[in-house]
Amino acid sequence: MLNAQHPQQGKYNLKSATPPNKPPPLKEVLGLLWPIYYKHRHRLFVGLLALLGVDFFQLVIPRILKKGVDALADGSAVQSDLLHFGLLICLIGTLATLLRFCWRYLIIGFSRHLERDLRKKIFSQVMAMDGSFFSKYSTGAIMAHGTNDLAAVQMACGMGLVAAADALVMSIAAIAFMFHINAGLTLLALLPMPILALATRFLSGRLHHRFDLVQEQFSLMTEFARSSISSIRLLKAYTLEKLQTERFAKLGRDYVHSSIRVAIIQGLLFPIATLVGSSSMLLILYFGGRLVMVESISMGDFVAFVTYLYMLIWPMMAVGWVANLGQRGVTSLRRIYLLLNRRSQLPPGIPGLLPETPSFQLQNLSFSYPGSKLTILDSLNLEITPGILGVTGPTGCGKTSLCQILVRMYPVPDNTLAIGNCNAGDLAPEVVQAMISYVGQEPLLFSSSLADNIAFGHPHAGIDHIQQVAKAVAIHDEIMALPEGYNSRVGEKGVNLSGGQRGRVALARALLCDRPVMIIDDGLAAVDTATEQKILDNITPWLTGKTVIWVSQRIKQLASADRILVLKQGKLDDLGSYAELMERNPFIKEISRRQHLQERGAA
Image (cartoon, rainbow, N blue to C red; front, side, top):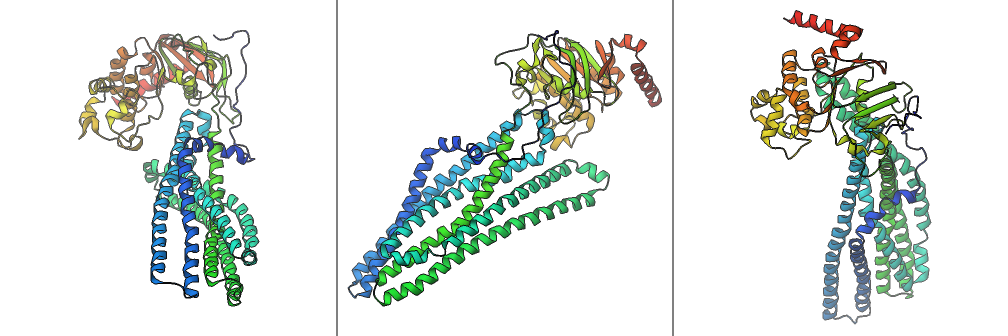
C-alpha cells in the first residue's frame, strides 16, 4: 500500500552505471571459475593424471636410449637387445598416444563445458537486467563478451591449463634427470633461463593493456556491423552505403592496428624462448661433448642429457605461449566479470508476494533517465483501474516513459508506485511483467514464422487460437495471401512486412497472451483509418475486464477509451472522458480538428 504520509518528492536518478575504473582483484575474478572447476573436478583429475602419464612415458624413453647407446658404444649390444629396446619404445609411444587422447578429450572438453556455462551466465544476466543496463551496454559489446572474450577464456582454461601443467611437470622432471646425470652440466644449461623470465615478465604486462584495447575495438566493430545490417534499408534510402563502408573500414583498420601491436608482443615471446633454448643446447653440445671426450660421462648419458634438454625447450617456449593465453584469458575474464557483476537497479521484491488486482496507483511519481538531469515525469498522481485508459499528449511529454515504468523497466522512488495495492518495490519485476502484455512503438518481430511470432508469449497455442487473434487485428487475410500462410518467415525484425502489418502482428501476440493488463504504446500508428476502425470494433470483447493503457494521438483510438489522460511536459495536464475533454482540453480539440480535416481531404 502507498504511504501517503511520507511521499518521496522530486526526480529519481539511478546510481551511475559506469563500471569502476579500478580493475577488480584477480582473486575475485578467478572466483567466477571456481564453481565450474569444482563441478568438473573428477573429469579434470583424471585428465591431469593422463597428462602426467604422457609426461612419464616421455621421460622414460631417454633412459631406454641411454642403455641402447651405451651398449653400442662398449660393443656389448646384440640384435635381440636392440629389437627389445625398439619394441619397448613403440609400446610406450602407443600408450602415450592413448593417454594423450584421454587428456585432450577430458581437459579440452572441460574448457568447452566452461565456455557453455559462462555463456549461459552471460545470457541469463542480460535477460535479468533493467533499462539502465541496456543504455550502458550496446548489443555489439554484449556480443563481444559472448564471442571473443569467451573464446579467450576457453583457450586459457583449456590449452593454457594443459600447457602450464605440462610445462611445470616436464621442466621439473627433466631438470631432475639432468641433475642425476651431471649437476654441473645442468647448471650450465639453466644459465640462460633468467633472460626468458625477465623478457616474459616485461612483455606480458604490455600484452594485457594492448589486448584489452583489441577487445574494446572488436565490440565497436561488431555493434557497427549489427546496426548497419539492421538498418540496411534506411542506408540504401539515403545512399549512404559508401560512407558506411568507409566508416566500417576505418574501424577495421583500427582493429587491425591494435591486433598487430598485440601480435608484436606475441611474436617476441616465442623467438626469445627459442633463442634461450638454443643457447642452452649450444652450451651443452660444446661442454657436454668435451665431457664425453674425457669420459666424465658416457655417450649414453650425453644422448639422454641432450634429449632431456630438448624436452626442456618446450616448457621454455610454453612459458611465452602460456603467458600470452593467460593474459588474454584474464583480460577477457575481467570484462565478463564486470558484466556479470552488474546488478539490476530494480529491487528483487518479496518472494511469493502477488498483486491483488490489475491496477496501478501513482503518487507524486517523478522520473529521470539514468545519467540525465532532465525530468521526464514530474509529480504524477494517477490511479489506473480496470477499463481502457487513453494516454496522449505532445511529443516528448513522457507517454512512453510512463509505459516503461509500468512494465518495470526502470525503478522509481519507493512509495510512489503501487501495483494492486502493493508497493512496486515489494513485487518481483518478473511477477509484474507476467501480468502485462506490451505492444511497443516499434513492434519487434523475430526471424521466424508468423505463427511463431504471434504465439511468442503463448508457445503452446493452437493454430485456431492464433487465427482468431489474427482475425481480430485484421491481418488474417493478408497472412493467408502469402505463399506459405502462417508458416511464412518474416525476416529479421519483420523486414518482410510493412509497419502496419508489424504492429498488428504485435497486437495479435499481446491479445493471445490474455494477461490482465495490456499496454499499447502507439501500436496502431501505421494502420490506415479504415483498418483502424475495424480493429477497434473487433478487439473490444478481448479487452473486457482488463486494465488497458492505450497510448495514441489518433482520435478514434482515444474516443474508445473510458478515460483519457493528457500529459504535458511530464505532468498531468487533464483527465476525463472523451466528451469532457472535447469540451475543455485544447490539445484534444486540436488533434480532433486536424484529423477530421485529413479525413475530409482524403475523401
